[in-house]
Length: 330
Image 1 (cartoon, helix red, strand yellow):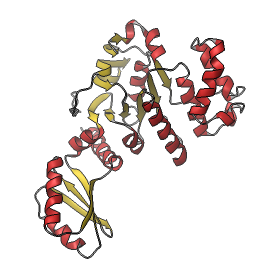
Image 2: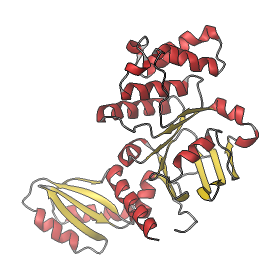
Image 3: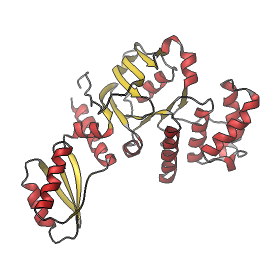
Image 4: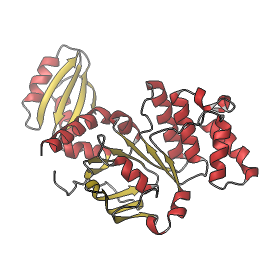
């Protein structure tokens, strides 16, 4: 594996809220992180992707000022984290990948406890707790013991805990782990709401479909190294080399003819038809290349009713599996 990371250049330059510069973290003889460089835009939902042991949690804890890097620096809005960890921690809400055991506390008491830890004046706590329980849709569970909550409810309560001091930045470490599909949808909607409220959100996960649907930007980590970082679509395109397009025809009378036509084009590298009138084609090139294929299909009289790049989740998963498999072989 090469130590230098690929990069996906963003379409427009946005001043980053967080700058991670040459960050490494060593535990005895193990390099958990190796010379990581990342810029995280303000207001983004940024995904950290990687298999177990990739260094995601270590990086999250460094961002939360809970760990000090062995070398390198992390800057939050031009403030270097290691020089003022207390100030940084007041700007950050950290949701770890585990939920502490609080069997004798209700949901409201749990949030009250953390509000006290963050030094929130007692007279303000009731209003904040009510607002947070409403935000995470747990108002009806305010007097329920934490241990009686479902896994999804505990995750939402843990997120409310991370928000109790109104941080600018949220760090969510594997937030969808162990959740059922409905709970994942609810969590995804909540994260988007928080972004709309002005939060910058960093999520670590190996559930790629979740990140592709939520995140504006991603970074792929493996064995403590940064493989690539940038906009989701650009990363997928750069690592995949091609863009998979879904082409739907009006009916199935010309599916075979359309497939044969696409296979003859030099920019089309693979064509499949797993569903009646739906064709999937891997096309090399930019938006202009895709547009030209569409124009030519219509000009040739093929009954195209829709033509669109495949949604990010599936493609991102294919790219991730390809890049991590390649890394394991090097």
